[in-house]
Image 1: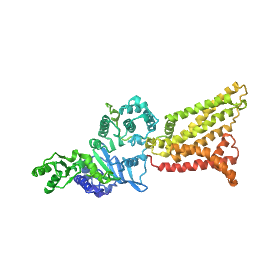
Image 2 (image 1 turned 90 degrees about the horizontal axis):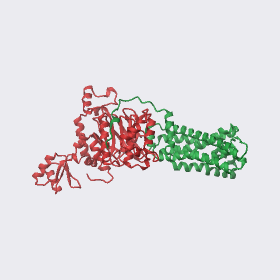
Image 3 (image 1 turned 90 degrees about the vertical axis):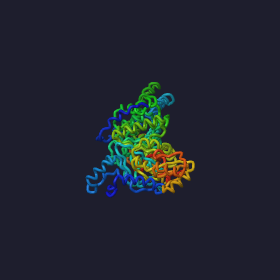
Image 4 (image 1 turned 180 degrees about the horizontal axis):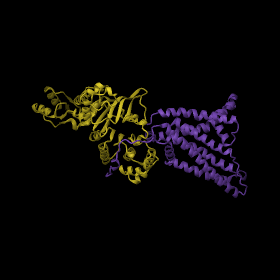
Length: 365
Length: 267
């Protein structure tokens, strides 16, 4: 990242986030400067860093230096690029949600982060060090990539024991973790073959937490968990982050991410399409209104000089404030059945609109 | 759902982690060989088959065969089949069962993991043969007493290491196939092809093509292994044949396989 990028103020970044979302509506896929407000030039030589005062001001805005840094990461396979020049960061004390449709490159990115897949170019570092260069990596970084990737013939307890022994931890950690993830002692003695997906997820989370890491990298951890389990996971990760831990979690369960994440990184077709704090990205969502006659509403808005989009489900979306839209509808004598900030429709709308071009179903946004 | 999150409450500042010593990895790999159902039963079957083979010799063998070598051969046959399978599965289960995702996350240096597996497999091989030797010795003493013949200890001190080496050759070929193929079914089938099917073909080839007759023992590792099992690898030429077949079937494919394994994607 060039030093010029660091001159961008926070408000610029905010409007960039807003631009990102609107740009996506008209089919602009890639947006060049992503997450710039986080990068404090940590990797730059002193001469290239912004001036002290600026640094301090920006530090306030961006809190701390990133724990996970992914830089220009690219992974190509024969004939297709799974991850295309991806850069983002995740910060300590925050939960970073990694969002994207199926096959967007989330899992590949995460596998590269922990050294299971070699990048074609670019790098991913944890606190400045490649994961594979950490002497005993799982003491620093808890990883759950695929809960089903376990030897089906081992018991849950045995899988934890192996991980515990490998890391050189006392065996008491095994029981602590089994209790922490609410697996009963009987369940822990069963072979993983007989585990439900939810139980495998719990076991995977137990493995990730075993080394008491500072960083968690979790791929779809809420998959297969029951509602109580999802709540439990949310509390666990929130507590982990509030104690200064860094959490990067991918999911396509948008509601989950919306509730838990502080920062969002959205990926589509291997490229980052948006990144920023949840507030920034969702604030850009504008207003959503419904009327029995949506076309008239859209027309009335147009007359009032407000651009709007008419979605196939009959909702009208616009960047104008809800009050403004309501006033326009009143003047036009149109009944509204729904009028709210699109924020609460929230992440799903944003996700679909940002990734429209990369969706398999070609969802109309 | 009332689990406490207390164990998380002690997130310390960056600790100075020590690298994972190879001895610990070997211990873990040894444990992994036998803490699955298949691994456990394979280990049990070695013990059970040694006892059955010993019993069979006592019951069925003619008195002339009630010797230590007789027992060793009877016990050695099932072992020469099972040990390579253990070596194969030690490697391939990481891929076929996908546990490699965890293993290579815990220890990103895959070369060290494979090295630890090789040492663990070696220990299992030597340990199993020690057990077999003990069971055979007990059988020999008991068998000769039952058949009222003299107890014959006809395995010389030069032959014993060759028997051990012969089994290790088989295990190494299995291990190599595991590293190269990284798939349990494929590696097991391949092992039986190169140990049962291929020797016959090579012998046939040697019979119809005279130029191949001299070459065959330099290429077929089974010939070299058989010589070891008979304790008949004496001359420099025979040791050279063993070295040649080891190079072809173990060293070269193992090095190439390792290079690919280190770069391959673990999914």
